[in-house]
Length: 285
Image (tube, rainbow, N blue to C red; front, side, top):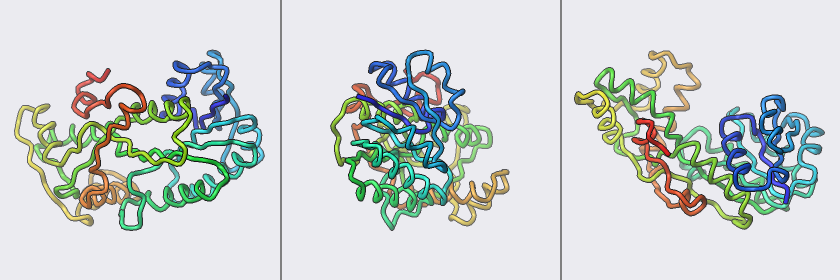
């Protein structure tokens, strides 16, 4: 069985590729990327590395030829990626791919204010409309992205948030990648959507407690509305688009769209997900 990963030279794709190379025959693994040279080490281990550019349909036809199951990793160009995802889906179907695993987000529904939701919802619908079966891996917020804010809170004594009393089930990128690799390798999981989460949902108070533990002094939670939080992020040096994106994730947290906790990581990989505290302490296995 030929198993392919798109965007395999990115951090997520490489982690998923490592999982496949450890759990399947490397001769079955196809890795597609715009930068084949970046995967020369994985090619040396037996993977078939192919050039693929979502803006070049001809390259996708060649990249997906002979592939039976594809991990379609969402690209990170918000607002422009649906057309590129659709091009990949069209090429995969044309080449006879039978199943696509797609990295999505929790609750991609109209009420969810996270800026990324419409792109993921549209891509999920494109896969439902295709002749292929699919699996949606709705990954929660990445745990490693909290390291900076917790370090800053430890340094300043204040954790600033627009997430209100909401909670998020932060999950490590490595756990998400392992789950994706497992679905790709195992077969099955047809037309199923899975929430991929960490072991618990954490509130701003929980994050402040982690910062307190790291600093040895009390860290206070400062609650802001969305506009004030966006302004605070801009003042801290973040570009406006990034500040706005993060504020929408805070709004989604406040609205309860990220609080679901599931055993999916353990069910798929046979090991439990890494807790945020373990990740911050560098004790993750």
